[in-house]
Image 1 (tube, chains in turn brown, blue):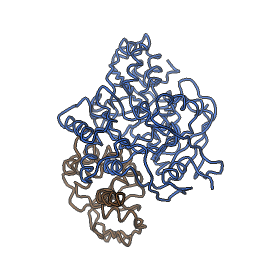
Image 2 (spheres, chains in turn yellow, cyan):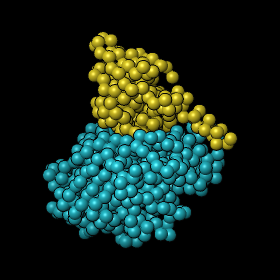
Image 3 (cartoon, rainbow over the protein chains, first blue to last red):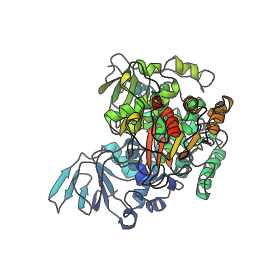
Image 4 (cartoon, each protein chain N blue to C red):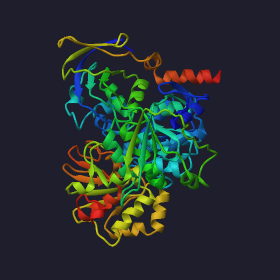
Length: 165
Length: 416
């Protein structure tokens, strides 16, 4: 995982649920690229066509609430989103994202659509250079940082090896 | 130090004397469930492991998009059949043998007091009504859990909810949980375990308690647990798989918060679009409806169907309303047939369909057009949840759904 990213902001309100991220009618595939075509289709129809690799989502509290669908973070990864920043996340979305390599940052950030943010995951800082604002956040605990880095699949393989031994 | 129910269940399954909130534990799971929608990505991930699943812990249930609605869903459902065959998983409930996954997990005796169960569906928290710690996970984690039989958990803080007093006419478990979500908000229990107590909870039949635990996720909770009593043990007799040990909170258990409610103040409610926290008494809004939906893991049990049928008996659904009834399982459907409820629904001009997730998630059937409104016994009223982004879902109990179907507008059954 990249330790520093720079990305353009897509701003979302509070309580963005996973039905908004990817409507249920598209839950017939797990392919991130396919799912990305319909990301935020109902609430933000301009998203899928204009999102660029490395873009960042900034939202208000309780991002990713509702359904357990892993298709939601998969759609965001497929869309090229490099991280999601919000004051709080729904717990299943949080776990799903870390497991499949989508970094999440728990932080309240004011930056709006189109702002450019520099995120430093190791030092826990977010810089909105244009607005002259810097935010700090507690970096992920080691345990989750490792999981994010290694990924759940590799982590499970290692666990299965240990269980055999 | 005393422990809450969630803490005790996690401690037992992690092989520890005690655990505390925020601690991360590796715990042994009792069951891992996936459905047809979350199954496909799980099976794809699973093949990466080069391992066999722990067969007796895996439960596969086809419910979201079966009978197959299109070629893509047909391939998806087939992937579950192939996975079940390949690994000889006997706990596979296909079309005609099952129903909505959570109802099946309860009916078939997988859910029981003291158990730790995960499922790739957010409403897995339903089994808290039987005293289990059950919670939703994603597809990749379900794959990992099927291979290892274990999962990591952050021990949640626990909030205590006490509902005391006598419930009024047509006030159901749905109204209690909507009332609570209305008071604490959709992130009011984020990452927390909810524990429910009080005379009103004790007085509820198991069916209504399942509705309460089912919607704990709508407050953001990890789980929603009700201490198991004789109603639970009676239900599980001749049904439960294996042994189980009920778990209760210690006297000195520490709760992050305690919330108290007077049951007499709770009335039949609706949650207006587009959040379950937007609650108002059903009698206080004047809104016409186009569809009335009765079904789902939240309120598709025989008790729910009985309640609605009693109101619809000898009446007709309003000419401008489509009423759709979807029993939550084959067993519920059979009971409803035997009791004449299906006849009552059909005589009232309701449409009755086989047991699936039905219209709840807006991708299969009962989909709403722009501007249409549905009063629904389901759990979510998010933007576009049941169809077009400009359609609306009003969450309510089965009695409100039935009463509203008759009048064509959202109606408190006490006003009929």
